[in-house]
Length: 598
Image 1 (spheres, rainbow, N blue to C red):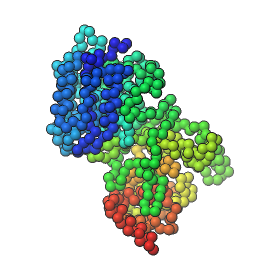
Image 2: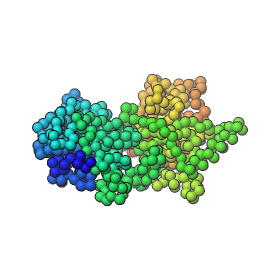
Image 3: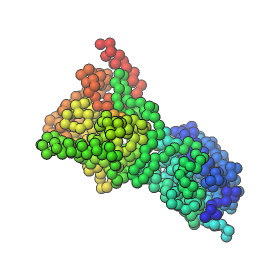
Image 4: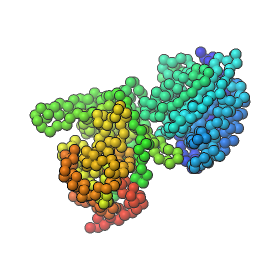
Protein backbone atom coordinates (compact mmCIF):
# COMPACT_ATOMS: atom_id res chain seq x y z
CA UNK A 1 0.00 0.00 0.00
CA UNK A 2 2.85 2.42 0.71
CA UNK A 3 3.65 2.36 -3.02
CA UNK A 4 0.45 4.35 -3.56
CA UNK A 5 2.00 7.38 -1.91
CA UNK A 6 3.34 10.00 -4.31
CA UNK A 7 7.08 9.77 -4.81
CA UNK A 8 8.39 12.67 -2.69
CA UNK A 9 11.45 13.38 -4.82
CA UNK A 10 9.22 13.80 -7.89
CA UNK A 11 6.60 15.95 -6.14
CA UNK A 12 6.23 19.65 -5.39
CA UNK A 13 4.10 21.63 -2.88
CA UNK A 14 3.42 25.37 -2.84
CA UNK A 15 1.94 26.62 0.45
CA UNK A 16 0.74 30.24 0.41
CA UNK A 17 -0.63 32.11 3.41
CA UNK A 18 -1.84 35.60 4.16
CA UNK A 19 -1.71 36.43 7.86
CA UNK A 20 -1.05 40.19 7.53
CA UNK A 21 -3.13 42.59 5.46
CA UNK A 22 -3.12 46.33 4.86
CA UNK A 23 -6.85 46.61 4.10
CA UNK A 24 -8.35 43.51 5.75
CA UNK A 25 -8.21 42.00 9.25
CA UNK A 26 -5.06 40.03 10.02
CA UNK A 27 -5.39 36.27 10.46
CA UNK A 28 -2.59 35.25 12.81
CA UNK A 29 -3.49 31.54 12.74
CA UNK A 30 -2.55 31.32 9.03
CA UNK A 31 1.16 31.36 9.92
CA UNK A 32 0.62 28.32 12.12
CA UNK A 33 -1.35 26.65 9.31
CA UNK A 34 1.71 26.92 7.07
CA UNK A 35 4.10 25.66 9.75
CA UNK A 36 1.96 22.61 10.55
CA UNK A 37 1.29 21.57 6.95
CA UNK A 38 4.93 21.98 5.94
CA UNK A 39 5.97 19.91 8.95
CA UNK A 40 3.54 17.12 8.05
CA UNK A 41 4.38 16.99 4.34
CA UNK A 42 8.14 16.95 4.90
CA UNK A 43 8.19 14.52 7.83
CA UNK A 44 9.09 11.00 6.58
CA UNK A 45 6.68 9.57 9.15
CA UNK A 46 3.83 11.12 7.14
CA UNK A 47 5.21 11.44 3.61
CA UNK A 48 8.77 12.80 3.38
CA UNK A 49 8.64 15.58 0.79
CA UNK A 50 12.15 17.07 0.51
CA UNK A 51 12.39 20.48 2.16
CA UNK A 52 13.55 22.04 -1.09
CA UNK A 53 10.36 20.77 -2.78
CA UNK A 54 8.07 22.44 -0.20
CA UNK A 55 7.76 26.13 -1.03
CA UNK A 56 6.23 28.28 1.73
CA UNK A 57 5.19 31.81 0.70
CA UNK A 58 4.14 34.08 3.56
CA UNK A 59 2.25 37.34 3.03
CA UNK A 60 3.03 37.82 -0.67
CA UNK A 61 2.55 41.35 -1.95
CA UNK A 62 2.34 40.66 -5.70
CA UNK A 63 0.67 37.99 -7.79
CA UNK A 64 4.03 37.28 -9.42
CA UNK A 65 5.39 36.28 -6.00
CA UNK A 66 2.96 33.37 -6.06
CA UNK A 67 2.57 32.50 -9.72
CA UNK A 68 6.29 32.36 -10.53
CA UNK A 69 6.86 29.80 -7.78
CA UNK A 70 3.76 27.81 -8.70
CA UNK A 71 4.55 27.68 -12.41
CA UNK A 72 8.13 26.59 -11.68
CA UNK A 73 6.91 23.88 -9.30
CA UNK A 74 4.40 22.73 -11.92
CA UNK A 75 7.19 22.33 -14.47
CA UNK A 76 9.33 20.26 -12.06
CA UNK A 77 6.65 17.97 -10.59
CA UNK A 78 6.29 14.63 -12.33
CA UNK A 79 4.18 12.96 -9.63
CA UNK A 80 2.19 15.07 -7.11
CA UNK A 81 1.67 18.83 -7.39
CA UNK A 82 0.03 20.49 -4.38
CA UNK A 83 -1.18 24.08 -4.06
CA UNK A 84 -2.51 25.37 -0.72
CA UNK A 85 -3.80 28.85 0.10
CA UNK A 86 -5.09 30.26 3.40
CA UNK A 87 -6.15 33.87 3.85
CA UNK A 88 -8.89 36.18 2.69
CA UNK A 89 -10.87 35.23 -0.40
CA UNK A 90 -12.85 37.82 -2.39
CA UNK A 91 -15.51 37.30 -5.02
CA UNK A 92 -17.32 39.20 -7.78
CA UNK A 93 -18.75 38.29 -11.16
CA UNK A 94 -15.21 37.77 -12.37
CA UNK A 95 -14.75 34.81 -10.05
CA UNK A 96 -12.65 34.01 -6.99
CA UNK A 97 -9.62 36.09 -5.96
CA UNK A 98 -6.99 35.13 -3.39
CA UNK A 99 -6.18 38.28 -1.42
CA UNK A 100 -2.59 39.39 -1.02
CA UNK A 101 -1.08 41.69 1.59
CA UNK A 102 -2.05 44.87 -0.31
CA UNK A 103 -5.34 43.72 -1.83
CA UNK A 104 -7.94 46.46 -1.38
CA UNK A 105 -11.57 46.19 -0.39
CA UNK A 106 -13.45 48.13 -3.09
CA UNK A 107 -15.34 46.16 -5.68
CA UNK A 108 -13.26 44.98 -8.64
CA UNK A 109 -10.02 46.25 -7.04
CA UNK A 110 -9.15 42.65 -6.21
CA UNK A 111 -8.65 41.99 -9.91
CA UNK A 112 -5.50 44.08 -10.02
CA UNK A 113 -3.67 43.28 -6.80
CA UNK A 114 -4.61 39.69 -5.98
CA UNK A 115 -4.25 36.19 -7.44
CA UNK A 116 -7.16 35.26 -9.67
CA UNK A 117 -8.01 31.61 -9.06
CA UNK A 118 -8.23 31.13 -12.83
CA UNK A 119 -4.45 31.62 -12.98
CA UNK A 120 -3.93 28.95 -10.34
CA UNK A 121 -6.33 26.60 -12.10
CA UNK A 122 -4.55 27.13 -15.38
CA UNK A 123 -1.11 26.46 -13.91
CA UNK A 124 -2.30 23.48 -11.88
CA UNK A 125 -4.91 21.80 -13.98
CA UNK A 126 -4.64 22.93 -17.59
CA UNK A 127 -0.99 23.75 -18.05
CA UNK A 128 1.83 21.64 -19.47
CA UNK A 129 2.92 20.26 -16.11
CA UNK A 130 3.96 16.60 -16.24
CA UNK A 131 2.42 16.09 -12.77
CA UNK A 132 -0.04 13.18 -12.64
CA UNK A 133 -1.60 13.94 -9.25
CA UNK A 134 -2.80 17.49 -8.69
CA UNK A 135 -4.24 18.76 -5.42
CA UNK A 136 -5.67 22.23 -4.71
CA UNK A 137 -6.64 23.15 -1.14
CA UNK A 138 -8.22 26.56 -0.49
CA UNK A 139 -8.97 27.78 3.03
CA UNK A 140 -10.64 31.11 2.34
CA UNK A 141 -14.07 32.71 1.95
CA UNK A 142 -16.07 31.76 -1.18
CA UNK A 143 -13.51 29.05 -1.96
CA UNK A 144 -16.28 26.71 -3.10
CA UNK A 145 -16.26 28.64 -6.37
CA UNK A 146 -13.00 26.86 -7.15
CA UNK A 147 -14.60 23.45 -6.66
CA UNK A 148 -17.37 24.53 -9.02
CA UNK A 149 -14.93 25.47 -11.77
CA UNK A 150 -14.55 23.04 -14.70
CA UNK A 151 -11.63 20.75 -13.97
CA UNK A 152 -8.93 20.12 -16.53
CA UNK A 153 -8.54 16.50 -17.65
CA UNK A 154 -5.37 14.99 -16.25
CA UNK A 155 -4.01 11.84 -17.88
CA UNK A 156 -1.51 9.62 -16.12
CA UNK A 157 1.22 7.60 -17.79
CA UNK A 158 1.16 3.83 -17.77
CA UNK A 159 3.56 3.57 -14.82
CA UNK A 160 1.49 5.75 -12.50
CA UNK A 161 -0.31 3.97 -9.66
CA UNK A 162 -3.19 6.44 -9.72
CA UNK A 163 -3.86 9.74 -11.44
CA UNK A 164 -6.38 12.50 -11.15
CA UNK A 165 -7.14 15.90 -9.64
CA UNK A 166 -8.90 17.06 -6.51
CA UNK A 167 -9.96 20.51 -5.28
CA UNK A 168 -10.86 21.10 -1.64
CA UNK A 169 -12.59 24.27 -0.50
CA UNK A 170 -13.11 25.33 3.10
CA UNK A 171 -16.65 26.46 2.32
CA UNK A 172 -19.27 26.65 -0.41
CA UNK A 173 -19.26 29.29 -3.19
CA UNK A 174 -21.35 31.84 -1.25
CA UNK A 175 -20.25 31.19 2.34
CA UNK A 176 -17.50 32.63 4.49
CA UNK A 177 -14.66 30.59 5.90
CA UNK A 178 -14.00 30.71 9.65
CA UNK A 179 -10.90 31.63 11.63
CA UNK A 180 -11.93 31.34 15.30
CA UNK A 181 -10.39 33.92 17.56
CA UNK A 182 -7.72 32.59 19.91
CA UNK A 183 -7.61 29.26 17.99
CA UNK A 184 -4.29 27.74 16.93
CA UNK A 185 -5.37 27.22 13.33
CA UNK A 186 -8.19 28.32 11.07
CA UNK A 187 -11.23 26.04 11.30
CA UNK A 188 -10.78 24.05 8.08
CA UNK A 189 -7.01 23.68 8.24
CA UNK A 190 -7.19 22.88 11.94
CA UNK A 191 -9.36 19.83 11.26
CA UNK A 192 -7.14 18.83 8.34
CA UNK A 193 -3.99 19.10 10.46
CA UNK A 194 -5.59 17.14 13.29
CA UNK A 195 -6.71 14.37 10.93
CA UNK A 196 -3.32 14.06 9.22
CA UNK A 197 -1.44 14.19 12.52
CA UNK A 198 -3.63 11.70 14.41
CA UNK A 199 -4.61 9.44 11.54
CA UNK A 200 -7.87 7.52 11.32
CA UNK A 201 -8.50 4.49 13.51
CA UNK A 202 -9.43 1.45 11.45
CA UNK A 203 -8.21 3.13 8.26
CA UNK A 204 -5.84 1.82 5.62
CA UNK A 205 -2.07 2.08 5.79
CA UNK A 206 -2.18 5.24 3.68
CA UNK A 207 -4.97 7.82 3.68
CA UNK A 208 -6.51 8.85 0.37
CA UNK A 209 -8.13 12.21 -0.32
CA UNK A 210 -11.72 10.96 -0.07
CA UNK A 211 -11.12 9.34 3.32
CA UNK A 212 -9.41 12.43 4.71
CA UNK A 213 -12.08 14.78 3.35
CA UNK A 214 -14.95 12.74 4.83
CA UNK A 215 -13.34 12.84 8.27
CA UNK A 216 -12.55 16.57 8.04
CA UNK A 217 -16.03 17.40 6.73
CA UNK A 218 -17.85 15.45 9.45
CA UNK A 219 -15.76 17.06 12.17
CA UNK A 220 -16.37 20.57 10.85
CA UNK A 221 -20.13 20.13 10.52
CA UNK A 222 -20.40 18.53 13.96
CA UNK A 223 -18.72 21.60 15.44
CA UNK A 224 -21.04 24.04 13.68
CA UNK A 225 -18.57 25.18 11.03
CA UNK A 226 -19.48 25.63 7.35
CA UNK A 227 -19.73 22.53 5.17
CA UNK A 228 -16.55 22.25 3.06
CA UNK A 229 -16.68 21.46 -0.66
CA UNK A 230 -14.82 18.96 -2.84
CA UNK A 231 -14.52 18.22 -6.54
CA UNK A 232 -12.65 15.26 -8.02
CA UNK A 233 -11.71 14.46 -11.58
CA UNK A 234 -10.59 11.06 -12.87
CA UNK A 235 -9.38 9.16 -9.77
CA UNK A 236 -8.69 12.27 -7.69
CA UNK A 237 -10.48 10.98 -4.61
CA UNK A 238 -8.20 7.93 -4.53
CA UNK A 239 -5.02 9.96 -4.44
CA UNK A 240 -2.98 8.95 -1.41
CA UNK A 241 -1.52 11.80 0.61
CA UNK A 242 0.04 10.56 3.88
CA UNK A 243 0.63 7.46 5.94
CA UNK A 244 -2.06 6.67 8.51
CA UNK A 245 -0.41 7.56 11.82
CA UNK A 246 -3.24 5.96 13.81
CA UNK A 247 -1.62 2.61 13.04
CA UNK A 248 1.50 3.72 14.95
CA UNK A 249 -0.27 3.87 18.31
CA UNK A 250 -1.64 6.82 20.37
CA UNK A 251 -0.67 10.24 19.06
CA UNK A 252 1.10 11.07 22.31
CA UNK A 253 3.51 8.16 21.80
CA UNK A 254 4.77 9.22 18.37
CA UNK A 255 6.88 12.25 19.20
CA UNK A 256 7.28 15.21 16.91
CA UNK A 257 4.41 17.43 18.06
CA UNK A 258 3.15 19.98 15.57
CA UNK A 259 3.89 23.71 15.93
CA UNK A 260 1.32 25.12 18.30
CA UNK A 261 -0.81 21.99 18.06
CA UNK A 262 -3.75 21.99 20.49
CA UNK A 263 -4.78 19.08 22.69
CA UNK A 264 -8.14 18.10 21.16
CA UNK A 265 -11.13 17.10 23.24
CA UNK A 266 -11.68 13.35 23.06
CA UNK A 267 -14.99 12.37 21.52
CA UNK A 268 -16.76 9.08 22.18
CA UNK A 269 -20.18 9.52 20.69
CA UNK A 270 -21.31 12.63 22.53
CA UNK A 271 -19.28 11.95 25.69
CA UNK A 272 -16.34 14.32 25.91
CA UNK A 273 -13.24 14.29 28.04
CA UNK A 274 -13.02 18.04 28.49
CA UNK A 275 -9.62 19.60 28.97
CA UNK A 276 -9.25 23.31 29.78
CA UNK A 277 -7.14 25.05 27.13
CA UNK A 278 -6.60 28.40 28.80
CA UNK A 279 -7.08 30.46 31.89
CA UNK A 280 -10.33 32.34 32.36
CA UNK A 281 -8.38 35.18 33.92
CA UNK A 282 -8.18 36.87 30.52
CA UNK A 283 -11.99 37.18 30.44
CA UNK A 284 -12.87 40.28 32.43
CA UNK A 285 -16.53 40.57 33.53
CA UNK A 286 -18.36 43.79 32.65
CA UNK A 287 -17.77 46.63 35.09
CA UNK A 288 -19.13 50.15 35.09
CA UNK A 289 -17.75 52.51 37.70
CA UNK A 290 -18.14 50.75 41.07
CA UNK A 291 -20.60 48.22 39.60
CA UNK A 292 -19.19 44.74 39.05
CA UNK A 293 -21.20 42.05 37.30
CA UNK A 294 -20.88 38.45 36.13
CA UNK A 295 -21.55 39.38 32.50
CA UNK A 296 -18.85 38.40 30.01
CA UNK A 297 -19.17 40.15 26.65
CA UNK A 298 -17.89 37.55 24.20
CA UNK A 299 -18.55 39.58 21.05
CA UNK A 300 -19.93 43.04 20.35
CA UNK A 301 -19.12 46.62 21.35
CA UNK A 302 -22.46 48.42 20.93
CA UNK A 303 -21.19 50.76 18.23
CA UNK A 304 -21.37 48.11 15.51
CA UNK A 305 -24.43 45.88 15.45
CA UNK A 306 -24.27 42.16 14.60
CA UNK A 307 -26.30 41.45 11.44
CA UNK A 308 -29.01 38.81 11.61
CA UNK A 309 -27.55 36.88 8.68
CA UNK A 310 -24.18 36.69 10.48
CA UNK A 311 -25.56 34.48 13.28
CA UNK A 312 -25.80 30.81 12.31
CA UNK A 313 -27.42 28.25 14.60
CA UNK A 314 -27.08 24.48 14.19
CA UNK A 315 -28.91 21.88 16.27
CA UNK A 316 -27.73 18.33 16.91
CA UNK A 317 -30.63 15.99 17.69
CA UNK A 318 -28.87 14.39 20.65
CA UNK A 319 -29.51 14.83 24.36
CA UNK A 320 -26.84 16.41 26.49
CA UNK A 321 -25.82 14.02 29.26
CA UNK A 322 -25.17 15.06 32.86
CA UNK A 323 -22.37 13.35 34.80
CA UNK A 324 -23.61 11.08 37.58
CA UNK A 325 -23.10 13.59 40.40
CA UNK A 326 -25.12 16.29 38.62
CA UNK A 327 -27.76 13.79 37.53
CA UNK A 328 -28.39 13.07 41.22
CA UNK A 329 -28.95 16.80 41.79
CA UNK A 330 -31.37 16.89 38.87
CA UNK A 331 -33.30 13.89 40.23
CA UNK A 332 -33.72 15.66 43.56
CA UNK A 333 -34.99 18.84 41.88
CA UNK A 334 -37.45 16.84 39.78
CA UNK A 335 -38.80 15.12 42.89
CA UNK A 336 -39.16 18.46 44.70
CA UNK A 337 -41.09 20.02 41.82
CA UNK A 338 -43.36 16.98 41.50
CA UNK A 339 -44.16 17.20 45.20
CA UNK A 340 -45.07 20.90 44.87
CA UNK A 341 -47.26 20.16 41.86
CA UNK A 342 -49.16 17.44 43.70
CA UNK A 343 -49.59 19.73 46.72
CA UNK A 344 -51.07 22.47 44.54
CA UNK A 345 -48.12 24.79 45.17
CA UNK A 346 -46.25 26.92 42.65
CA UNK A 347 -43.73 24.75 40.81
CA UNK A 348 -41.44 24.88 37.79
CA UNK A 349 -42.41 22.64 34.89
CA UNK A 350 -39.68 20.92 32.91
CA UNK A 351 -39.67 22.81 29.61
CA UNK A 352 -37.55 21.56 26.72
CA UNK A 353 -34.61 23.78 25.80
CA UNK A 354 -31.11 23.58 24.41
CA UNK A 355 -27.57 23.35 25.74
CA UNK A 356 -24.86 25.39 24.03
CA UNK A 357 -22.36 22.84 22.76
CA UNK A 358 -20.03 25.13 20.87
CA UNK A 359 -19.63 28.76 19.81
CA UNK A 360 -17.13 29.96 17.22
CA UNK A 361 -16.58 33.45 15.85
CA UNK A 362 -14.96 34.48 12.59
CA UNK A 363 -14.70 37.72 10.65
CA UNK A 364 -16.20 38.97 7.40
CA UNK A 365 -13.32 40.40 5.40
CA UNK A 366 -15.16 43.24 3.69
CA UNK A 367 -16.84 44.71 6.77
CA UNK A 368 -14.89 43.12 9.65
CA UNK A 369 -18.28 42.18 11.11
CA UNK A 370 -18.37 38.99 13.17
CA UNK A 371 -19.64 35.70 11.80
CA UNK A 372 -21.04 33.68 14.73
CA UNK A 373 -21.71 29.93 14.71
CA UNK A 374 -23.68 28.40 17.58
CA UNK A 375 -24.17 24.65 17.95
CA UNK A 376 -26.88 23.32 20.28
CA UNK A 377 -27.75 19.99 21.90
CA UNK A 378 -31.10 18.96 23.40
CA UNK A 379 -31.57 19.76 27.08
CA UNK A 380 -34.35 20.76 29.49
CA UNK A 381 -35.16 23.11 32.35
CA UNK A 382 -34.39 20.60 35.12
CA UNK A 383 -30.88 20.18 33.67
CA UNK A 384 -30.56 23.95 33.83
CA UNK A 385 -31.77 24.05 37.44
CA UNK A 386 -29.35 21.27 38.43
CA UNK A 387 -26.38 23.08 36.93
CA UNK A 388 -27.37 26.30 38.69
CA UNK A 389 -26.56 24.79 42.11
CA UNK A 390 -23.01 26.03 41.70
CA UNK A 391 -22.14 26.10 45.38
CA UNK A 392 -23.51 22.63 46.15
CA UNK A 393 -20.84 20.25 47.39
CA UNK A 394 -20.68 17.04 45.37
CA UNK A 395 -19.73 13.61 46.79
CA UNK A 396 -16.06 14.11 45.88
CA UNK A 397 -15.92 17.25 48.04
CA UNK A 398 -15.85 19.72 45.15
CA UNK A 399 -18.57 22.24 44.44
CA UNK A 400 -20.31 22.26 41.07
CA UNK A 401 -18.56 25.52 40.26
CA UNK A 402 -15.11 24.25 41.24
CA UNK A 403 -15.50 21.05 39.25
CA UNK A 404 -17.32 22.10 36.09
CA UNK A 405 -16.84 25.87 35.62
CA UNK A 406 -13.74 27.38 37.19
CA UNK A 407 -11.12 25.07 35.59
CA UNK A 408 -12.25 25.97 32.09
CA UNK A 409 -12.04 28.89 29.72
CA UNK A 410 -15.60 30.30 29.56
CA UNK A 411 -15.97 29.22 25.93
CA UNK A 412 -14.90 25.66 26.77
CA UNK A 413 -17.12 24.89 29.77
CA UNK A 414 -18.85 21.50 29.23
CA UNK A 415 -22.07 21.73 27.23
CA UNK A 416 -24.31 20.42 30.01
CA UNK A 417 -23.40 23.49 32.08
CA UNK A 418 -24.87 25.78 29.41
CA UNK A 419 -28.41 24.34 29.36
CA UNK A 420 -30.07 27.62 28.50
CA UNK A 421 -29.74 30.46 26.01
CA UNK A 422 -31.41 33.76 26.87
CA UNK A 423 -32.18 36.89 24.89
CA UNK A 424 -32.41 40.31 26.55
CA UNK A 425 -33.78 43.41 24.85
CA UNK A 426 -33.48 47.10 25.70
CA UNK A 427 -36.62 48.81 24.36
CA UNK A 428 -36.65 52.52 23.57
CA UNK A 429 -40.06 54.08 22.94
CA UNK A 430 -40.89 56.55 20.19
CA UNK A 431 -40.54 59.43 22.68
CA UNK A 432 -37.05 58.25 23.76
CA UNK A 433 -37.87 56.44 27.01
CA UNK A 434 -35.95 53.35 28.07
CA UNK A 435 -38.17 50.61 29.52
CA UNK A 436 -36.60 48.95 32.57
CA UNK A 437 -38.39 45.92 34.02
CA UNK A 438 -38.26 44.23 37.43
CA UNK A 439 -38.57 40.46 37.42
CA UNK A 440 -41.28 39.02 39.64
CA UNK A 441 -40.63 36.48 42.37
CA UNK A 442 -42.43 33.85 40.30
CA UNK A 443 -39.60 33.36 37.82
CA UNK A 444 -36.82 30.82 38.31
CA UNK A 445 -33.84 32.93 37.26
CA UNK A 446 -32.83 36.14 39.08
CA UNK A 447 -36.24 36.75 40.74
CA UNK A 448 -36.87 40.22 42.17
CA UNK A 449 -34.05 41.87 40.23
CA UNK A 450 -34.11 44.79 37.83
CA UNK A 451 -33.55 43.57 34.32
CA UNK A 452 -33.86 44.32 30.62
CA UNK A 453 -37.10 45.55 29.07
CA UNK A 454 -37.93 42.02 27.89
CA UNK A 455 -36.14 38.69 28.01
CA UNK A 456 -36.87 35.25 26.66
CA UNK A 457 -35.14 31.88 26.73
CA UNK A 458 -34.67 29.69 23.70
CA UNK A 459 -37.30 26.92 23.67
CA UNK A 460 -36.97 23.59 21.89
CA UNK A 461 -40.74 23.45 21.44
CA UNK A 462 -41.67 27.01 20.48
CA UNK A 463 -38.65 28.25 18.53
CA UNK A 464 -38.26 25.47 15.96
CA UNK A 465 -39.99 26.15 12.65
CA UNK A 466 -40.54 23.37 10.10
CA UNK A 467 -37.56 21.52 11.58
CA UNK A 468 -35.29 24.46 10.87
CA UNK A 469 -32.72 25.54 13.43
CA UNK A 470 -34.01 28.34 15.67
CA UNK A 471 -33.27 32.00 14.96
CA UNK A 472 -32.21 33.83 18.11
CA UNK A 473 -33.50 37.12 16.68
CA UNK A 474 -36.94 35.50 16.55
CA UNK A 475 -36.55 34.44 20.18
CA UNK A 476 -36.06 38.11 21.09
CA UNK A 477 -39.08 39.03 18.95
CA UNK A 478 -41.15 36.44 20.80
CA UNK A 479 -40.13 37.98 24.11
CA UNK A 480 -41.20 41.42 22.92
CA UNK A 481 -44.56 40.01 21.83
CA UNK A 482 -45.32 37.93 24.92
CA UNK A 483 -44.03 40.35 27.55
CA UNK A 484 -44.66 43.77 26.01
CA UNK A 485 -47.33 43.10 23.33
CA UNK A 486 -45.11 44.50 20.55
CA UNK A 487 -45.30 43.16 17.00
CA UNK A 488 -42.20 42.95 14.73
CA UNK A 489 -43.40 45.71 12.41
CA UNK A 490 -43.43 48.18 15.32
CA UNK A 491 -39.69 48.26 16.01
CA UNK A 492 -36.21 47.98 14.55
CA UNK A 493 -34.26 45.18 16.24
CA UNK A 494 -30.46 45.15 16.42
CA UNK A 495 -28.17 42.64 18.11
CA UNK A 496 -25.50 44.34 20.23
CA UNK A 497 -23.55 41.47 21.80
CA UNK A 498 -23.10 37.78 22.47
CA UNK A 499 -22.57 37.14 26.19
CA UNK A 500 -22.13 34.66 29.02
CA UNK A 501 -23.51 35.13 32.54
CA UNK A 502 -20.45 33.81 34.35
CA UNK A 503 -22.36 33.40 37.60
CA UNK A 504 -24.71 30.84 36.05
CA UNK A 505 -22.83 30.06 32.84
CA UNK A 506 -25.85 31.01 30.78
CA UNK A 507 -25.23 32.05 27.19
CA UNK A 508 -27.21 34.96 25.85
CA UNK A 509 -27.62 37.69 23.26
CA UNK A 510 -28.23 41.39 23.90
CA UNK A 511 -30.56 43.37 21.64
CA UNK A 512 -31.89 46.89 21.30
CA UNK A 513 -35.39 47.55 19.89
CA UNK A 514 -36.34 51.08 18.83
CA UNK A 515 -40.09 51.56 18.60
CA UNK A 516 -41.27 53.34 15.47
CA UNK A 517 -44.65 54.60 16.71
CA UNK A 518 -45.37 53.34 20.22
CA UNK A 519 -44.81 56.01 22.88
CA UNK A 520 -44.32 55.46 26.59
CA UNK A 521 -47.97 56.32 27.29
CA UNK A 522 -49.17 53.82 24.69
CA UNK A 523 -46.89 51.15 26.18
CA UNK A 524 -48.45 51.63 29.63
CA UNK A 525 -51.94 51.54 28.12
CA UNK A 526 -51.21 48.31 26.24
CA UNK A 527 -49.86 46.60 29.31
CA UNK A 528 -52.99 47.55 31.25
CA UNK A 529 -55.07 45.70 28.63
CA UNK A 530 -53.22 42.43 29.24
CA UNK A 531 -50.02 40.75 28.08
CA UNK A 532 -49.34 37.02 27.60
CA UNK A 533 -46.49 36.76 30.12
CA UNK A 534 -47.39 39.73 32.28
CA UNK A 535 -46.62 37.71 35.42
CA UNK A 536 -42.87 37.61 34.63
CA UNK A 537 -42.45 41.29 35.60
CA UNK A 538 -44.09 43.10 38.47
CA UNK A 539 -42.91 46.62 37.69
CA UNK A 540 -41.73 48.81 34.80
CA UNK A 541 -39.91 52.13 34.91
CA UNK A 542 -39.56 54.60 32.04
CA UNK A 543 -36.23 56.42 32.01
CA UNK A 544 -35.17 59.21 29.65
CA UNK A 545 -32.83 57.51 27.18
CA UNK A 546 -29.88 59.80 27.78
CA UNK A 547 -26.52 59.13 29.42
CA UNK A 548 -27.14 61.11 32.62
CA UNK A 549 -30.60 59.76 33.62
CA UNK A 550 -29.82 56.14 32.67
CA UNK A 551 -26.56 56.22 34.65
CA UNK A 552 -28.31 57.76 37.67
CA UNK A 553 -31.09 55.16 37.51
CA UNK A 554 -28.66 52.24 37.45
CA UNK A 555 -26.56 53.59 40.34
CA UNK A 556 -29.49 54.73 42.49
CA UNK A 557 -29.10 53.35 46.04
CA UNK A 558 -32.63 51.92 45.86
CA UNK A 559 -31.43 49.39 43.28
CA UNK A 560 -27.97 48.65 44.69
CA UNK A 561 -27.43 44.88 44.58
CA UNK A 562 -30.76 44.34 42.80
CA UNK A 563 -29.56 44.24 39.21
CA UNK A 564 -29.46 41.08 37.14
CA UNK A 565 -25.95 40.52 35.72
CA UNK A 566 -27.15 41.31 32.20
CA UNK A 567 -29.06 44.59 32.47
CA UNK A 568 -26.30 47.15 33.23
CA UNK A 569 -24.15 45.87 30.37
CA UNK A 570 -27.13 45.85 28.01
CA UNK A 571 -28.13 49.43 28.84
CA UNK A 572 -24.51 50.59 28.59
CA UNK A 573 -24.18 49.10 25.09
CA UNK A 574 -27.53 50.62 24.09
CA UNK A 575 -26.24 54.05 25.12
CA UNK A 576 -23.02 53.41 23.21
CA UNK A 577 -25.06 52.55 20.14
CA UNK A 578 -26.79 55.94 20.33
CA UNK A 579 -24.02 58.24 21.56
CA UNK A 580 -20.74 56.43 20.90
CA UNK A 581 -18.35 54.86 23.38
CA UNK A 582 -16.25 57.96 24.02
CA UNK A 583 -19.26 60.10 24.92
CA UNK A 584 -20.77 57.42 27.19
CA UNK A 585 -17.49 56.84 29.02
CA UNK A 586 -16.86 60.56 29.51
CA UNK A 587 -20.38 61.61 30.54
CA UNK A 588 -21.13 58.61 32.79
CA UNK A 589 -17.81 59.17 34.60
CA UNK A 590 -18.92 62.74 35.34
CA UNK A 591 -22.29 61.53 36.60
CA UNK A 592 -20.68 58.95 38.88
CA UNK A 593 -18.30 61.57 40.24
CA UNK A 594 -21.25 63.83 41.10
CA UNK A 595 -23.05 60.90 42.76
CA UNK A 596 -20.02 60.14 44.94
CA UNK A 597 -19.80 63.77 46.04
CA UNK A 598 -23.49 63.98 46.95
